Image 1 (cartoon, rainbow, N blue to C red):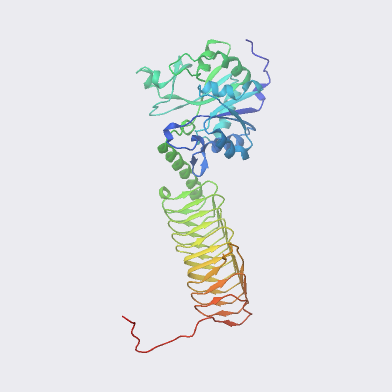
Image 2: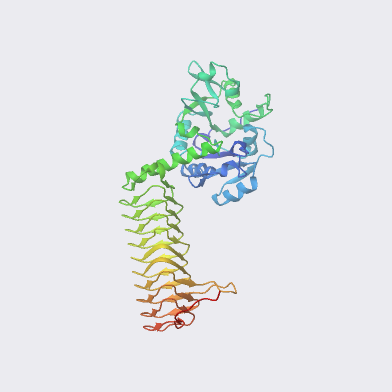
Length: 463
């Protein structure tokens, strides 16, 4: 077998092969391992994102267990899928990605190593090119190497990788380990892959064998590339998943606090990396902020709030126990405690939504208040209107259709009112407490539908 001419590969773009075919039995979960979320994002998506940010455009994902679901989740990310039909080891997985169709250089990564960062990959590629390597093995030093393969050296030079289960007592003392990340010229990989044998207990083809095979061919330049400990952290069980998530949260929290966000207890606050928060905002323990949430300056996010995909402008107070999703909250609003803002809602400036108020798919005007115990659904409410306690916007009719209620500016909606959509309440109108309103109310009118009060003195119920 001969190596094809590959003289230009040192400057060629890299192709990434990400191994994601494993079942992950130790996760004890029906979900494919690489789709388990780390701080709200599938772990393999983190690896893909780091590759893209490092300038790698050709990304090949090797799928196997749960291939259909993995493809469905990752398809929007623009990667190419290759299926490993049988679980025959890491070398077989790489072979499944058709490396013979690749020209240039290849980086091989694991889909269950979610803590790898773009600057890590950039550094590996830079070292590989500067040293003009044929194969680069990324290694790191761990205080407790555990089940990692040990890097054995001879006179300081890379000699072999010994799997932990096959290592002698002396070899197990080695702290330098194989991270499972390889960089290689495509021609070299294609030269050595067919030489890998499955002469082991599991009858699998191990990618680690390309190191010893390459060393045997003395013309090949094979060196280790140093990596930080985060690149070695794989996720194999739920405990490791939680640990990885905690580390991601911690890193993002540090950036936020350095920018002026006040986080009372970073250990018990959960803010995904996609969340933006302005300086001067204070976040209390137990809060979970996720998705495309953007929070402005000088806001207060009290304890046990859950906020997802919501834009919150400056000087907003979100009080304890509130739940907000896919909505817009304008400046100086006050929400909660224990309020729920459902999708497609917009609260304009200085709106007050109090305890046990639910808002859904509604626009509420400046200065309007719903202080407690109300449901506002499919509504458009003007400015400086008061929504009384127990008010219900009845938007779901017996025929299962939904309609809209419009309430103008400076209205007073008394307690325990039901507004039956479709309905228009004009500006300045007053609705008496306990009314059920089914007809439009003109501007500046009073609407009351109470039954007359009946009193029978000295009344005694029949036995």
